[in-house]
Amino acid sequence: MTGPVETARAAWGADLPEWVEALAQECAASSQNRVAQRLDRSGALISQLLRRKYPGDLAAVEELFNAVFRNSRVNCPALGDIAATACRDWRDKARHFENTNSHRVRMYRACHTCPKMKGDTR
Figure (cartoon, rainbow, N blue to C red):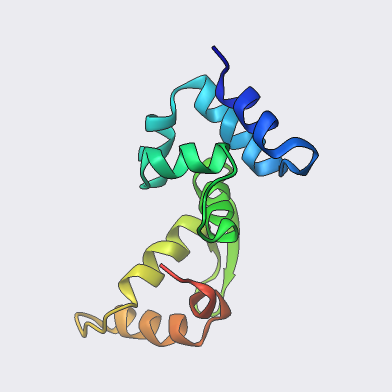
């Protein structure tokens, strides 16, 4: 029986992105389902990714992986340097306008002028 790292290496060969190998290592350390839960994605997505069969946006999954497992940071036009997970949360909230407080309105406007929001296909 092969593990996730071997599966990824066999499927990707020399084209194996470093972050996919790191994702496979996370799966080996726990499980594909636990990794999927942390990413708030399905186990099927992880399986397809490791087997190089994922038809979706690899850059979006890479960004999510880096945000969750590597605590990456981004430069927010409104808040400055913030965790990438916080950026994702604000982008999710900015999908629908809610006038609940002035900060939420400010972030809605900031997110809609940000290039990260324009490239977000979720």
